[in-house]
Amino acid sequence: MSSFAVILPAAGASRRFSDKNYKKPFAPLAGRAVWLHSAERFLARSDVKQLIVVVADEDREEFSRKFGANIAILGVDVCRGGAERADSIANALEMLRDDIEMVAVHDAARPCLADKWIDWVFEAGEREGAAILAVPVSATLKRVDKNKAVAETVDRTNLWQAQTPQVFRRDLLTRAYAARAGEPATDDAALVERLGEQVSVVQGSELNIKLTTREDLRLAEQVLKVLPKPKTGGVNPFADDDMWR
Image (cartoon, rainbow, N blue to C red; front, side, top):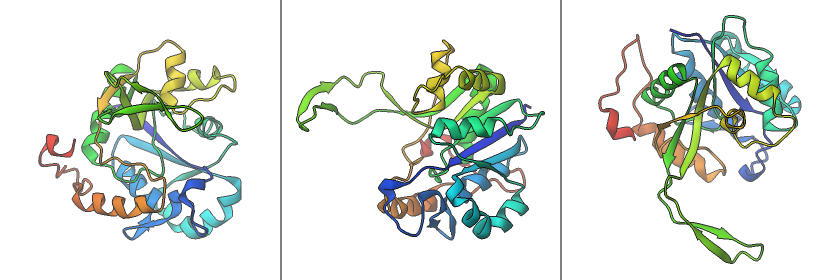
């Protein structure tokens, strides 16, 4: 069994969330902060040896005040955020412990996880070197021009929407970030792809939602009610693999 570190980037501005009191990873959801839902799922695993939360400098003091007890009890490492998401991940990579072999990156604002999805993508990442959760695109896609008129309908054949966790061999992800040269990337897999490396896709679930607006909190609360409970005592209560796709 490989040793995993999990990076939870939570340093974004949350502009579309439009809440004067909370950024989306720190908003309350079903009795705890959004980021804690994912953190506790990962830290319940025996193969996860390190969890790093990346927080913007402007939020560090408040984050420590609100979540200091959680940080201490869970053994979470806190990392300084960067100007862009990729800068934040690069900072976290510098904090990896020497014994870490695999790295998973998971959106801190994506709280609706099931243990089985993590199992699937961890296993694929360990086997293939790079793997992501994703779901096939089912909606009709339109490319829109600057006047917000439809320019074309995009063929959705073989199009998948990327999710997280995204899992990589440590050396591969470190090499991808070292080679990025400041170029933008919307996810970590894109940087690995630029190296010419293959990234395997593991089918995730539409329930693995990423919060964008405050309205998404209501949806996430309902999703959490129907997801299997976290593993307890090493027993996975996942009754039917297919029902959560």
